[in-house]
Every structure is written in C-alpha cells, then in structure tokens.
Image (tube, rainbow, N blue to C red; front, side, top):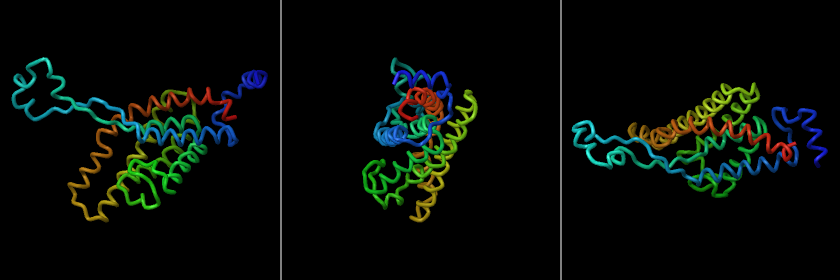
Length: 226
C-alpha cells in the first residue's frame, strides 16, 4: 500500500484533475449524496441585519442602551445545501458530481424523506423542487469550470455560476408552480424572497469557501477515488 502511494506521488498522479469511475469513487459519490441530505436538515443560525422603522424615525432614542445591537438583528436559519453541492463539484468533478446528484434526487423521488418537505414522486409539485433540479446543471457546469487552472478566480467563478444556476432554476420553477395555482403577484414575490432573498448573499460567501475546501479534500480522498 505504501509503495503504491509513493509511486502515485512520483508519477504526479495527485495532480490529475478528477478521478475516473471505480469502486472507490462510487463510495465517495454515495457519501457526497449523503452530505446533501445532512446539509438539508442542518440549519445554521446566523445573525442578520433587521433595522426596524423606529430606528430611522428617532435614532437617538432607539439606539440608547447597551442592547442596541440586539434591536437591529435577528436570527436567520441558513441551509447550507448549495455550498455543500459546490464542494461536491470540486471533489468529484462534473461527471461524477452529476451522478452523485442524480443518486440524491432519485432516492428522494423514490419515496425516501430526504428532501426538505419529505419525498415521493409527487414532490415535483412542491415550491422548492426547482432548486433541487438546479443541482444537476450547477454541479456539472461548476465542475467543468474547476477543471481549469487551480487559481482563486476559477474557484470564485465556479461558486458564483453554480449558485446562480440553482437560484435561477428554482425561481423560474417556483413562479410556474405558483402561476398554475393562480397565486397573486405579492404571494409570488414573497415566496421568491423567502427562498432566494437573504439566502443568495450567504450562498455566495459560503460557496466560495466550500469550493476551496472541496479542492483540498479531493487530494486527501484521492486514494479512495483512484
């Protein structure tokens, strides 16, 4: 085993962009699918700015006291699905990353309660199913971008592009579902803000970090994937 590792290092096979399909990479793919499930049910509480109207009407009175910071913030439960997905793109690349997403979606549609609101073949009627559909093109395109040079620019480009694809796909699907249900314009806007409003900003920050972490993890997982 040690001789095999030494031989890989000498032949610079660790510099290979992405692994091929084999038993080791299949195990990592299934593990990555499980990571998406974990991220779905692991909300991260984050403070966000929420300035009430009173702060602008009488700011001196409003900000008086030691708890003024608590008055303009509240807790936002961030769901780290998109950063985890883009980390998978950095680990597995476009093809194996896409297969990992297909495993996840297929398992959910088959009835396993791994989506945010459960699972089953009728899950396509849910408002948020468009975001799940966006995982597939996002991981493939981000993985292709990460096949380029190992530079920070490519990491940012992959993170931003993948995140944008997921949100756009989710928003379009959301609008179609709500229009079919004859929801009002204000209801549609409210759902879009709830699904992609503040989430969009945090997705960009965490996705960038996740891509960098994914590239580092790919090196450490190379033995299992090659």
